Image (cartoon, rainbow, N blue to C red; front, top):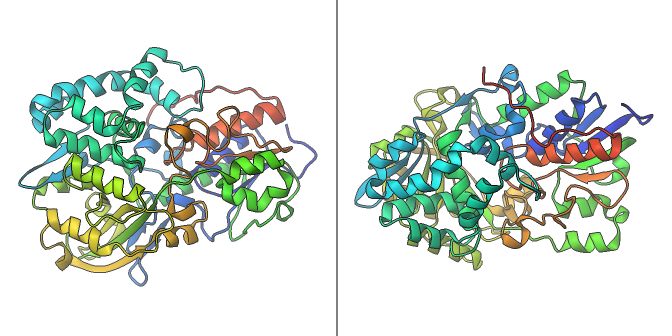
Length: 489
């Protein structure tokens, strides 16, 4: 299959999508090399240590429903390369004022004990999706096209295209049910009154019931390391500490795949791109940023409702109205004093990450793009609200502003961890067109990052679909739209 070029494909960027594209190409016997600017691979799946302590924390992604559900990841022998999923007792907890927290259970029938009379509406929403999940997740994690489950996708679309606020109020009578769904939908980083904001909430809820919200043992780095291990065994190469500033920095190859955002692609390859395509990439819209706190704790978070300790993820923000207001403020370029906060409690379930009885806490909130504001107080106020005495157990913190995140990983333009806003206008057309979104109109150039469909999240499917196009166009190899999912060992 190989050409006379030293490489059949080079990939710029070693995040999950870049590694996935490299693996898929190497599986066909192609000669592949990945270049990474940083000293370690992984992009959004890196795990670092607190200086001087050896305690491990995830810099970006931490909990991985879409990685566990990913058809491509599930088709690979990643467990043979050290990837082990840990499933908390409950995927999610959502504490509330003056009443018990509401938990999201994997077993959909257990939602009756959490939602009471609203459980019937919850079941109507999620049971059909769970029943057809294996096929639907392929459609959901694919570019625009003819779905394999048209009826199931139509049923999903009728609700997913609505605003989260409207759908939640229509389906549920109780505030606790509405709050639970609002917390799921707010992962979209869209105002909850905006169309399509319901989509992420529905997908994450269905994933919780079907695939769970697991964490990788040892940290998110395990995902990148497993992909890299498999790639190396397939004959692929990886070079770290090698920043690519121009196409001239790359070795000769038949194709180049960019696991980068449009902003970086313009910087590296702009002169090779037609002016009309440059213009479209320059108009690509990035979403809000994030502010993050990683903390070492002397003991677990003292939640007022101890059931929160059963969940790997905790959503803080109170009611639907409060969460909606927080996200509305962010969309108006303002910082909320009462932000919606996402918390992960990995060390409760993965003790190897820490030592001496201490724990780690991972938390972030949404902020305007490019924000340099320190939101530590606001995040900790929300934690204290539901866990009085939290600040007393904090030993050490590492904080990152939205600006810091872009410095850490230039793919996160303005601190946007999704690779671009995922609203109705840009959901299907990222980065420039809904047709062949992975192809750049220049010989041998392609995009495989989360700035292409299906967008943000650790699932590798942007890389997988890009690699399929490369195999077909450049090497005449036709492959299945659906990876052959292996049975769990």
